[in-house]
Image 1 (cartoon, helix red, strand yellow):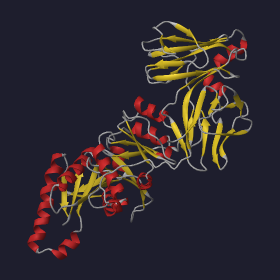
Image 2 (tube, one colour):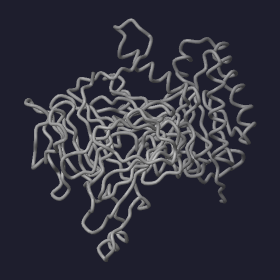
Image 3 (cartoon, one colour):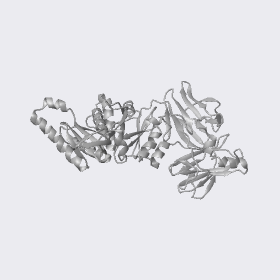
Image 4 (cartoon, one colour):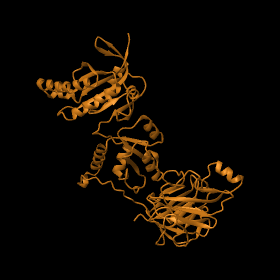
Length: 510
């Protein structure tokens, strides 16, 4: 007996048995007629056929897994507008024997078992459909692994997501209830994070540069607490994202908004308000804030004779940029600023594009993205360019955070700029080896895990976590004197932690 590959779909009316007991024959006939009138034209529209009517259920076959799911979504859409009808649909794709118009085989049995697990008003499908469908065309998500009666082994099942529904993961729901959910929307500013946050990234195209930039802008937190909101995502983008340990929430913007509001409303019924305001309740002692660029002194170990950094319009420092507003050049004789755009000033004096200024301690640099303060410490550095950024990490009472290029969560990551275009090399084999080995100032002077910051009863303890890369403190009350952290020191609000090319400020949360 020959078989063909088909997608087997079952439809089922919610609470049919209960309705039979509560409805007269005419009413029951009307329910079944409405069910048939709703399902039949949609099945035919998408190239399927109804194999048989099982009373409250239809068995349908489709040549295409994608079209079967499109039909199911259309049925659900129409059912939502039909008073008194609520339908569940279940399907899988596999070999089917068609005998005298009927359908038999493992795929039929599996679809029937999936139907038994499917909640009312939802569309679930099996692994065969998941493999055969166009994953970019059908919004979907996993609902977990299930043991199905008469089916060998556990099966992972999936759910098609209609445009008007969104199912929030438990970790997101819990964060809403605890008011630790942070919604980071494209085009918005970097949010203030509460302790132990869960972050929803909204409005970002999967795999896009903007999404990667948003990830880079966040402090280092557990990847499992970073969730991308999307409705259509390719299989490759989904696999790459999930492969980093992050999560995906499938839903349209409107559906996500409704789902979040509902969780918030349910958990705050005593407030008497239907307005959702997910507030960041910051029961914190202070915040760690990425606060500037540190410029190591020269010459550097017969490797670096000089170097420069470019300031971009968004306030970020780059090794080299085609869109820079100014450049700082460091040599053994000091730091020189070169203006590369209008609206750059030093101590209130405008510096025309192309002009250069030797930097002095205490100078204020005006830029299109805000003011910088230039400080020359007493050791180790040619200067510090100070300006608080929006990248910050709160410190709760008795909390702990790491600093470094790749700190453990929770942590504040240092920038790790790639490329060597900004370095002038010393002559000799040592510099040649460093250049060939990918040497950069960011990587050479700070470790992946550089320092640990802990809130204690007597202050904020900073402990070095690297045996070769030095961590310094610049105290707000000690002028320009750097204090080496070996192995630990107590810091206070407005002190600066300096390590490698990074400056981190300890700020009040007010």
